[in-house]
Amino acid sequence: MKSALRSIAFAGALALLLAGCASTYRLGNTVQSFSGLPSLPASPTYRFERLPSQAAQPGHEQLEALADPALFKAGLRRDDASPRFSVQVSAQITQVLSPWGDPWMSPYGWGPGWRHGWGPWGPPYAYADPPWYIREVGVIVRDVASNKVVYETHAHNDGPWLDQRTALAAMFDAALQGFPNPPPGPRRVDILVGDSHVAAAPSAAASAPQSAAPAPSPQQPAPATR
Image 1 (tube, rainbow, N blue to C red):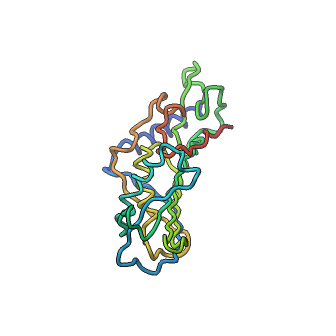
Image 2: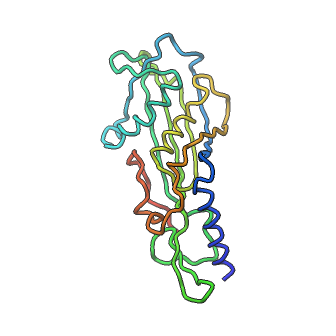
Image 3: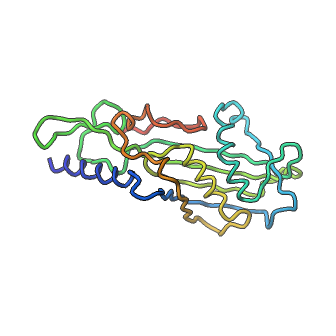
């Protein structure tokens, strides 16, 4: 009973956290970048380039559209006809069991994150852990003339349910912070996201893995199971 009450308390606290008490949500990212580009040239134009495995992905064009504003803010200008650089972008989202889940509750066969417990008055009840995601984006910039990689950056984030397109766009923004002269080593970069893109309190149906918002890129592994 105490375990069930603790779970209810955690769910209530998380709902308040995500309910938009503040006007923004702080999306924390771990970023690491590598640069061989001391400064931007006079004409920092680029075009998107896709790996053979990305060419067949129907959602990849959407992913490039999410990265484009961050590239523009970093000083790059898209010009497919006369590019100085080529840019490859990637993203991956994995749904995992929530770290807020109660380890003392026994999961039953209703899918990852669904659990069964006993209410304070005795009858059994079912509830769903808040969905949790591990996200990663990457950007690789090549010099078109030499085909040499001049910039590589990755951003990693894990957190609760959030509109995936909003999350990925913010992560590209974080990944390109400091371009083209980023600080060495891993660093934390926080991006503020408007609360209209944050789930207030996911319902049981919305918490189920099959109803989670898909990533623009189809490279999305299956949800983790116990």
